[in-house]
Image (tube, rainbow, N blue to C red; front, side):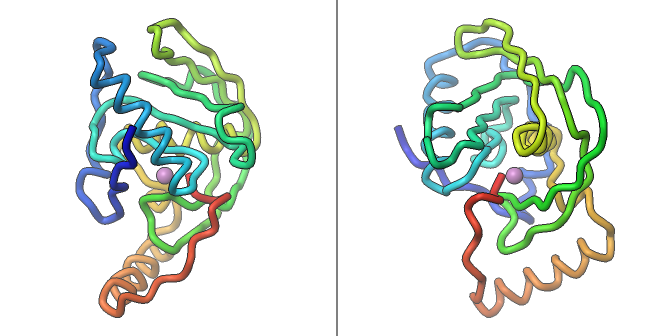
Amino acid sequence: MAILKILKYPDSTLKKISRPVEAMTGDTVRLIQDMVETMYAAPGVGLAAPQVGALQRIIVVDIDYQNPGSNLIKLINPEIHRAEGEVVWEEGCLSVTDFTAEVKRAARVEVIGLNEQEKEVRVEAEGLLSVALQHEIDHLNGKLFIDRISRLKHELYTRRLKKMLRTGKTQPESPRLMI
Ligand code: NI
């Protein structure tokens, strides 16, 4: 297992659409293991393959960050099958340095994907798990949470980030928000 480098906005890979996994290979299994390790090490509650430079439709989520492993979800080719209601959640992302913002999403979702044995898995979720699944599936479609906020807030952040990168000054990230 290995901890992989997490790409940060504005890396162009994060804007690309990931392709479906067509067959489970040793490489796929290794990638998923490395994604899990990278997510826990970050620390974060979710990670999508494109964030580590692999444009494949794979996500890992574990919102129970205090008990790593007990509620770990690994999904291959996940799709939102059903979405209901509306919720506003303060989101952050391992690929977006030093920024959180309120994002409006579906309150409850049902997500269908495959597990590592290529068996269908259904996940019904609400609260943080619902938000995290939608956030990670967005990553597979080249979308970040900052693409779901107002253009004004997005531009303010981009300007602040440029300044942070120039001065090398960033603030520590809050682990429980990072998805
Ligand atoms: Ni993210």
